[in-house]
Image 1 (cartoon, rainbow, N blue to C red):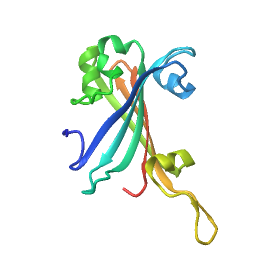
Image 2 (cartoon, one colour):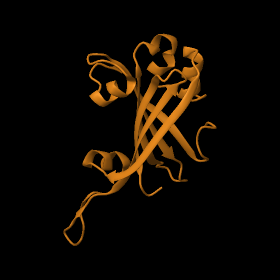
Image 3 (cartoon, rainbow, N blue to C red):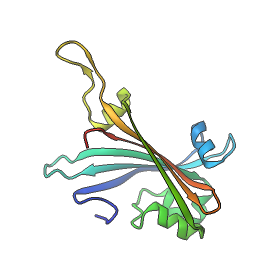
Length: 160
């Protein structure tokens, strides 16, 4: 599908909207004040495992300042950005991107996250609770002027 992913992996953008009520952590990461709106894009990554049902292996959400939608209208569509969002934004906004920070940690999945990733949660045969571990990521993309132009969060199975 694209050079951005490993062989047999592909992604779909399942949502691209203006979010009128972004979480405070998103506004803080983007350097925006309370009351601002943001563009929210949700990406789901799959692995073609040779069966009719492909495995969902990661889900991520990226947020951008709403005013980027004027110069970078692809952010507001569910079309894949083939060159990658990072390069697309640099070209569309005429900025130089100089720093990418990825922070990953293992964590226990919420029930909703486990459902999203297709992981078992519930009770074991020994009647003990089963809570799967996931990898939680936070991603910051900054310009050479120190402005964060994209903030993202992701979840993936810890079984990868």
